[in-house]
Image 1 (cartoon, rainbow, N blue to C red):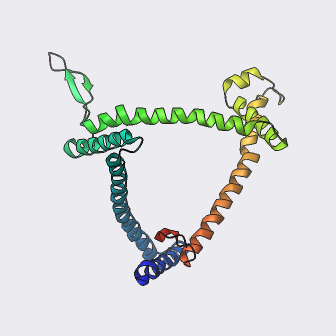
Image 2: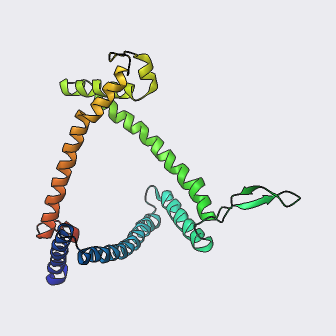
Image 3: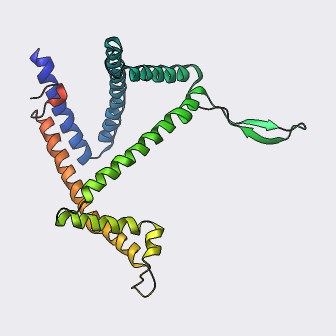
Length: 238
């Protein structure tokens, strides 16, 4: 059992990690074909993972409905939305028909009418408005987090507050209108120039440092997985 649960997954991760490493640094027709084959297998495996995720989602909400746990009514909405979209997509497809021409009494075209399939109608009139609502609510959380982060409790927070104010004023026409200083011979306004300088120099430097750190972390995690040190992908904590 240890062979199936532990040793074989580690061996597969090691072999595929090493092969993909050499494929990236030794480009050739064979390595490109290998990458294409692996990509196709990745899509196939992702499809099975999608089915597993759907089963896990429905099973989780089924238990919430059966036990009548708090918030079980939202599970009803999950089931209704899932099966509604599924049935609409399987019965009528997911693509709209070409626009239907509208003709005058003489037979000349005077316009067209968009023909919606139920799936796209639900997507455009239910899914998209709910997404817009969710992101609108997130804006208030972002504002609250920004207020807590920008309080000038120390020197670092003060620098962050002043920089944020400059960038926010410099990115909107109202800020440039309020501060119309042109110290560069009348060629450009100072506030938009300062904003661009902040974004292109200290901010860009910080972003690159963060990306370098993320890259080093990804390399470290990849090496830990390849050599069998990191095993959380097998469902355990060791």
